[in-house]
Structure formats: structure tokens, C-alpha cells
Image 1 (spheres, rainbow, N blue to C red):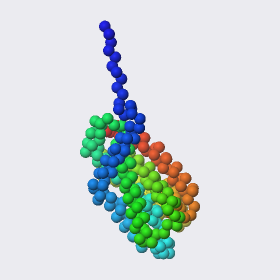
Image 2 (image 1 turned 180 degrees about the vertical axis):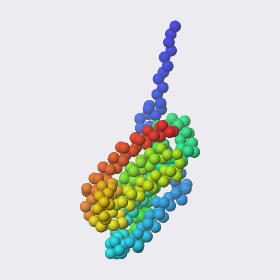
Image 3 (image 1 turned 60 degrees about the vertical axis):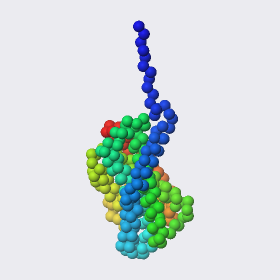
Length: 268
């Protein structure tokens, strides 16, 4: 009597190198097409930051900086950081919605990496950050914003802002995996984003703030991103702020990406 040994099953994902990368890029394309087919989803990263910029510049510019032109110079890079961070909130909301609709159940039936839907969604939403940055730069130029450092440093400043938003978006992905309703994702995200974005030197210099608030502003990672963007786009010291921004970006990815993937595997 002979024993028939079953041949070990090797998944397609494991057999082909870089399979996760290819699958993630394919799903990122799906996310990008979905966004382009519903352009109204981009209003929060196009019209909203322009309204913030106009309101803050003309309401507070004279009182805080002495002139609207000077205030525009320091405010625009900060608004850019704020807008991209709020734009990342949509990633968690969309993922939570897809899970509720059963889209991820269909993904599970496909021979793709288990993490590919998450990675693809986060990569696909990069277009939202790019649209926000370009919209603000174009409208800011019309208002009179002056690029004081040249093309390359300005480009590096924009890329740094996008990188930080991409890193923070993994926290929203984790929230999207843990809560049951898309509205809850949005509510939790707002609670976290307001102290992070407004508890900075975005609207007023740190030296004018009360001591307890100044302590928070000085350790807030978003303050470092805003300082780095200002230094790269309008001039001034930037090396320290850039280093802090890169370090915080790495921390966000290392901490929240594995937690998000783990939560997704438990739920999907």
C-alpha cells in the first residue's frame, strides 16, 4: 500500500516576486479611476483650502503680520500641510465604505496579496494630495505668493508635504479598519486633526502663544512639517525641520501600517 503525498500548494503571490507591488499598483489604478470619475470628491482638496486661504489672509493678515502679503507668505505652506492631512481622512472613510459594501470580499476571492487592497488605496489617494498642492500653489500665485527659493527647493517642499500626508494616512486606514461606520471614521479623524493642525504656528508665531500651548506646539510633528515647507519654499532655516519631518514620517508608517494591515486581516 502506497501513500500519496499531496503536493504543497504555493500561492501565486508567493511564487512571483514583487507580486504585492504589482497587485497594489493595479488597485491604486482602480482607486485613481474611481476618484477621477467622481471629481466632486476633490472639492475638499481644491475649493476648501482656497476658501481657508482667502478667509485667513484677509481677516487676520493685517492684525497678525502687519500686511496680507506678508501673512500670505507664511500661511500658504501651512495651509498646504493642513489640507493634505485632512485629505488623508478620505482614505479611511473610503476603505470603511468598501468593506461595508462587500468590495473587499471580492478582493479576497482573487489571487492577490492580502495587503494589496490597503496599499493600493493609500497609493491611489496620493492624487488627492497632489491636486491639493497644485491648487494652492496656483491660487496662491494669483494672490501674490512669492517663491523665494527657486524651483527645486519648492518642489522638495511639496514632496515633503505629500510624504508626510501619505505617512499620516496610515493612521486613518487603521481607524477605518477598527470602526463600523464611515461617519465614525470622519468623527474620530476630526477630533485628532484639529489639535494637530491648529495647535501649531500655522496662524500665529509660537512666541505669541501662552506657555502651555507653546509647549504643545513645539513638540507637535505638524509644526515641524510647516516649518520645513516654509523654509524650502520661502527661505530660512529648514534642515532641522526637514530631519524631524522625515523622522516623524517614518514613525507613522512603522507604527500604523502594520497595525492597519493586521486589523484588515482580522476584519476582511
